[in-house]
Length: 342
Image (cartoon, rainbow, N blue to C red):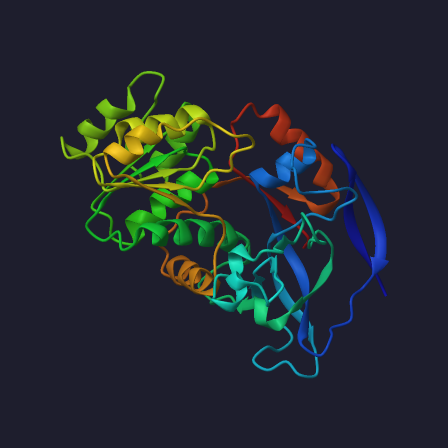
């Protein structure tokens, strides 16, 4: 049996092909893909700017669907179960994998980048990498669990945010979800910043009331306005640009934490003198582990995340190229773009 498959053959070029429908291995489930989210890293691939992706590539790592078939050794999944899947492929033998840090495996590959993704009607994945979606989470929301797990992990890199003051720099999809998740986890106050008034309005609509635009208000002033002279306990950098991380280091309260969530396409200067002098904790955050996904599903099932304000555009699978064209023309006035295979 054949299925549809979207293949990015070169930057900016997507071709639709027919491929054989996968058959599950003994420890795999075959998932009928229902939704695919396009993320910032996918856009880097579209522009030919992702350093670790080669063409042709099948994209798709933010996905949701339903189990179509299960391998002979699989337990706990049945046809029709709605699932999401963790997109990491790891070696299982390096130091990181042996010590539970498989999300930073020395040989890490990620679906849609260094290995085939799920931009196709059916996808085979190891059952250990699949998680069942609670009934309270819609199938479109389920495709947002991957970026939600990113921010759950990022906040955990700081620790318990209950009663803490949190600043989020960048109000794109990840920043918006980070602010919402911090509030869901009990943060006392959340500030979000962005140079886009569109994104700030989306953040407000999603429930983050305290916002600031660096073009009209210095970050230091914004933090004092939001949090008082003691500023905040943790800053999440969700942009990935030199100016933003420099602002974070310059304005952080002594002894506080900066979590680097944004993807930096190139090396940027950081004032390590300030990091040392102020005893700042500068912490990286890459991906996630299974407990982060479980927590993300729990938060989503509780209704704590306003996904509707984050998902701004929707396209049918056959309009995959049009989705990227729309992102190009939107001039930043879009957040999550969703592809439907229904």
